[in-house]
Image (cartoon, rainbow, N blue to C red; front, side):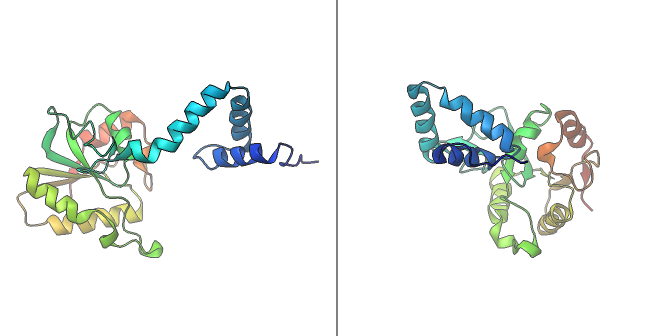
Length: 205
């Protein structure tokens, strides 16, 4: 017989449910985390609670590229004088930046779109940060834009749309090589695969 999930006090069940809402965390893992935290000293729990409470204020989006940053300041990548600002890598979500950075291959800057075109989900161009991308291309005098978007239908449609807007400019427009699995999200690709896809990037037609 299946054991009921309401075996714990109500407040602990709520904590378990909160952890279960995190990506990749199932019921059993959420239980183990919550039960481990019950054994923590009160001060340790209070410190964690304070960190989580302050998270919306202390972790913000970079005003330049949309990457994660602190206190409304530019992110470490945009703030680094070592990055090549003439190359802009366009991604859907800031989580994909970390995947690309782990490849240790890319040395340019990024631009986070905030999603991809998806008519079925009513996600249209006006909801993405495309206008700010065009502004950054002009401001940085970019010579190349890499459309590092997912290999699914929506990602490729977004890449085609953006490349159409950039057509006619003195600008190299490339996309990742086909080393990535078809229909995949680059957030889950390993660093070697991403590095190879960047190294072998090809021009958009």
